[in-house]
Image (cartoon, rainbow, N blue to C red; front, top):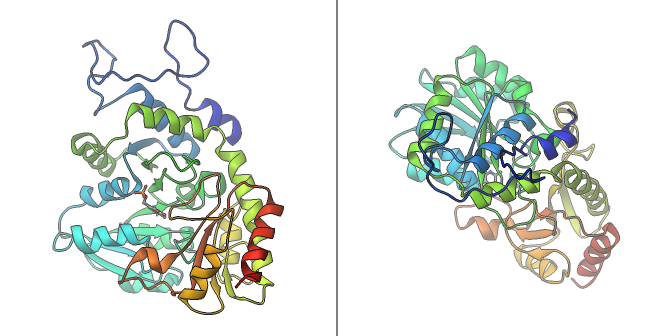
Length: 368
Ligand SMILES: Cc1ncc(COP(=O)(O)O)c(C=O)c1O
């Protein structure tokens, strides 16, 4: 099955005698004790099972685990580690995941934040107790690119598990498991949901090994699982994921090109641009460059805020991956400990008509 077909049929598991075309929502939290049936919805539910099937297939993994948010999915990986383990993570890791490591796992896990765009820095950061390498590429919000194959090869030769946050790229454009990663993590709140109305997260594994058993135990016994409703809607949204991603990437490419030639823009971060420092690696490991970009506006935080408030079709809101374009001054959202430049504007380029998006940006710059 090709990807587009898989996205439509891979999660449509129907066991209803009425033969509906789409899988019904099973709201029951409990099930008759019968051979082969689920017992209790925290452990297994038909809609979650369907979602996990399509997630595993899209990422070319053996198995998947769905969670109630991306952060819960990431946390399940950290909770599956032995206390005292050392983690190597990117120095521009999504700030919510970084906050978990710094605040929730303080005193439980050791962490080094390093620049993973430089492969050498991984080698230098490895300690005898390093158990996990966390990669995020393209990264949020700087769109930095890390070489998944090169980093995974070093990790593998040191017995270190590799997890890749694939939220920005999605499996439409990047498959970390085929490049050497052991697990893939997603905030399914973003492109998988695609309409800014479902919170969710996912992990997909290459092998059903002992570490995966620990992760599944955190999912089921920890209990941060999505509802049957959320699983149903996510499985439904995934059916259009390949076509939405084509549109997001096409529009982002045009918006990035427009911004690079604008006199009020200092720098544009989009891995599809030839001048992006990670372009070569991105072109090797991605089949498209995604729908996210950031740029530095010439001026300060106030100029960036004024520009954003001039826009009509880009909503000033956090999050990403929905059909509607979203924009935000990222440092303002990350808070006082943010290392993001104050004039950095992050854009989730949506599926409105490109002419409307470009003319909206034009008038907002004009009014500055
Ligand atoms: C790259 C990345 N990873 C993880 C997350 C966390 O996901 P969630 O908000 O669904 O918990 C986000 C959220 O913005 C993200 O952008």
